[in-house]
Amino acid sequence: MLSLTKVISQRFSPTTVTRSLFNATPKIINPITAGSLYQPIRSFKVRTSVKKFCKDCYLVKRKGRVYVYCKSNGKHKQRQG
Image 1 (tube, rainbow, N blue to C red):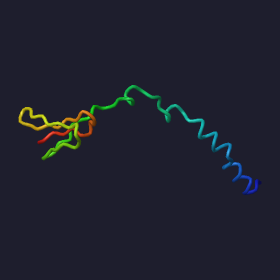
Image 2: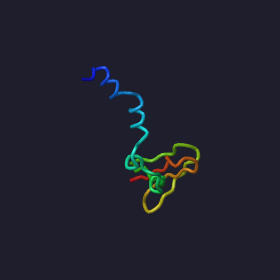
Image 3: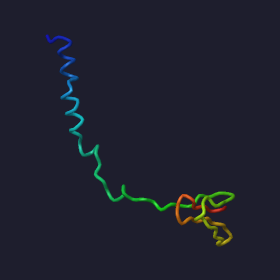
Image 4: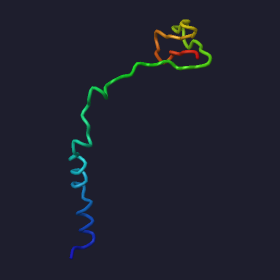
């Protein structure tokens, strides 16, 4: 019969732990696909009242709605309504 310390040292030895970490199957690690590299176009924030955030923001009125566009920062895009 093996001693308890020998069994524990065999089960939790650093070589088996690191070996199991580096032998990952391809199902776990997905290759980079074109879909994962897709950057969505920034959409409008819909608010009841819109305002300019910086000096590059400007207002546009179209189809009964007020839009705020920004040349320097896409996060500033807003739509009223």
